Amino acid sequence: MQYKLKKLADASLITGALDPSFKKMMRLWTALGVPAFASILLIFWLMVFKPFPVA
Image 1 (cartoon, rainbow, N blue to C red):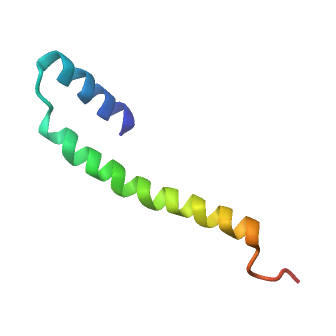
Image 2 (cartoon, helix red, strand yellow):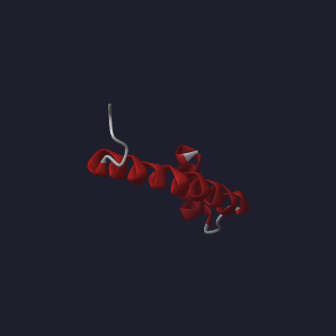
């Protein structure tokens, strides 16, 4: 998906117009990226604070 976004962005520099699918794909990229980043923060928090005792 990231490669396709780059390809569309490069094409827009040549044509001078951004493809309509770029905006849709960028929304999807962001929608997938936000939970991925949040999960990394959650994993980091769990490793640092260890809220569950290990028996």
